[in-house]
Amino acid sequence: MKNVLRQDAREKRQSLSPDSYATKSRIIRGKLEGLLQFISAKKIMAYVSTKEEVNTHDLIKDCIQKGQTICLPKVDGNEIKIIQVSSWEQLESGAFNILEPTSDDEAINPEDLDLIIVPGIAFDRRGHRLGFGRGFYDRILKKTTAYKVGLAFHEQIIDEIPNEEHDVPMDLIITDTSLITPNPIS
Image (cartoon, rainbow, N blue to C red; front, side, top):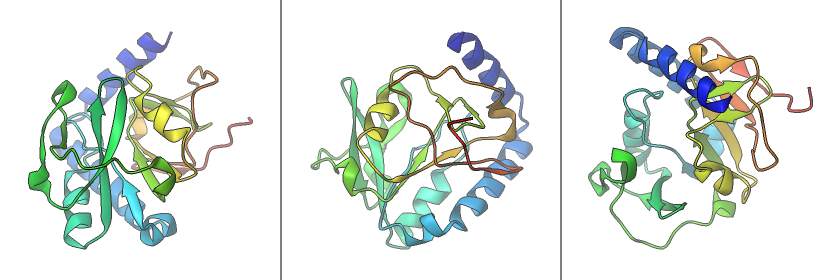
C-alpha cells in the first residue's frame, strides 16, 4: 500500500514544471519564514532538498548568512546524525547522493532542537508523512519535542497515509496553497 502511495506521489511531484516547482517552493518558504516558531527558533534542523522536494537550498544558505543555528542530517549507517553547519561549502554528496555535512563534529541531540523542517513524499491532513521507508526521521522525531513542520507541494497531500506506532505526526504542514494544522485524532 505505502509503495503505491509513494509511486503516485513521486509522479505528481515529477510532473511539476520547473517554473511551477520554483514558484511553489518560494511560496512555501515565505510561509515558513513567517511562522513564529521559525522566527523564535534557536536551533533549526532542515533537510537538504533533492530536485523533487520543496527547495531548501536558499533557505539554508540564508539561515547560515543570518547567523541562525542550522543543523542538517548526515546518514551514519541506519541512523541520522544531526550536524551543525556554518557554511554551504561544508556539504558534499553523501548517502543516496544527497548533500550532507562533511564534518564529523559531535552530533546535536534532537532534544536541543527547537524546529525541525521535515521532508516527505506525501502527507495527509492528520499530519502523517510518507517517507522513503527507512525510518530515519521517525527515529529522530521520537526523541524531541521540537516543532515539526512538513514541507510539501499541494499535490503531495493525500487523503490518508496508513500509520504505524513508530510514525510521528507533524505539528504543521506547509503547502503552496495552505497551512495544515493536523488533528491526528480524527
